[in-house]
Length: 297
Image (cartoon, rainbow, N blue to C red; front, side, top):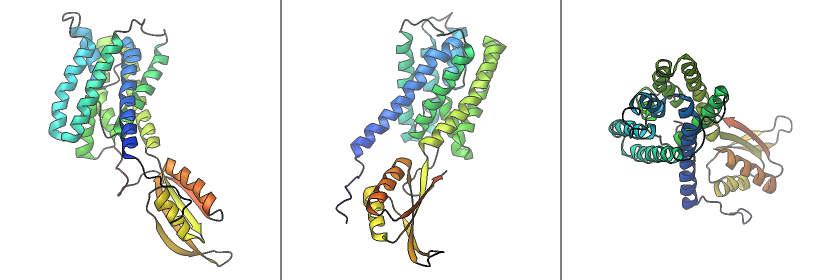
């Protein structure tokens, strides 16, 4: 093995910390979106958050303790039972954690004495609501978890129909968004329906970028060095075969590998250092199924 290649084997503790940090970031963004933009403007961008906003309009004036955060927790509890039945124990445990954290964070944020809505521009606030909630859902889905509510319905639809998560979530949320027409009027209803369609594009876009992978082709006269870099430095496998230069007629080894975007950047830099004559082609791989790569949600 090359002494110049340091051991970059991923640390399980660091990976675990990164996973939970990303998961909690997703939940926090969703909570902020609900508190600052959705609830004050009555945007019902689907989900149990949207349904709880509609129900709070009718229930809270008569039963004061059944506020929007409390109704959100009750609705999520009901759907958690469905998740346990249809999605299994592993995902349900993560969903329980996320839904409790989501409901608790919305409740704690509601204690902050902030004048809401923040502006008198509802379209501007809709844009931020869509960006925050869309990015939040994408991050949570990328962690193979859900925040409960219609996320569970969407995951059940995906499990039995193989539909991608964004259109499945759109289908589950559309009816809830339509309730805004009858509860808060046509303006809020139109904003809400527009918001759920926009949110589905944000979710798809963020998931696409979070899971983006690279297809790397390396043409080299030093296959042993390149092979060691791929295995020992970025910890990926590879396939190699012989090729012949069309102009020179000289024999070359062609090595192909697929890796995460961050690994591709490290691989490119390392190859430039240990084999500067190598010809390297890096392209986007939209989706990879197989060992070492998870199926996109």
